[in-house]
Length: 106
Image 1 (cartoon, helix red, strand yellow):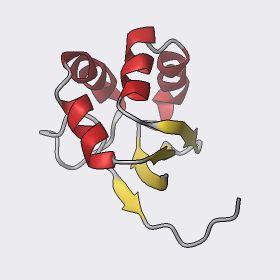
Image 2 (image 1 turned 135 degrees about the vertical axis):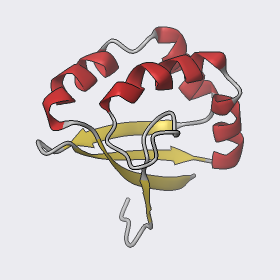
Image 3 (image 1 turned 120 degrees about the vertical axis):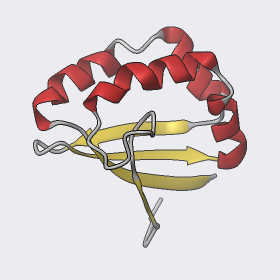
Image 4 (image 1 turned 90 degrees about the horizontal axis):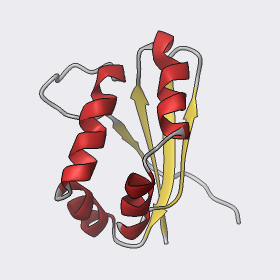
């Protein structure tokens, strides 16, 4: 299983609302994420609105295609879109920076 990390930004004043939405994530969205192969999916936030997301996946391209093909996923990303700080407003969802793994210990 490969590990992935990204960084993205939300409006700092919306951190509590963003967390609440994730605390109340739709059960069918959680199932879709799991069915798409995402494991140990975790999001961390700093007070300034910087977020770090981590997950593990066997075949990320396959999982991403499954999410992109789902109207449910599009509905979720569209709902979340109000929180993101990004240069390219045509992107639905976060504009993120991929991180490269430097070191890992089990």
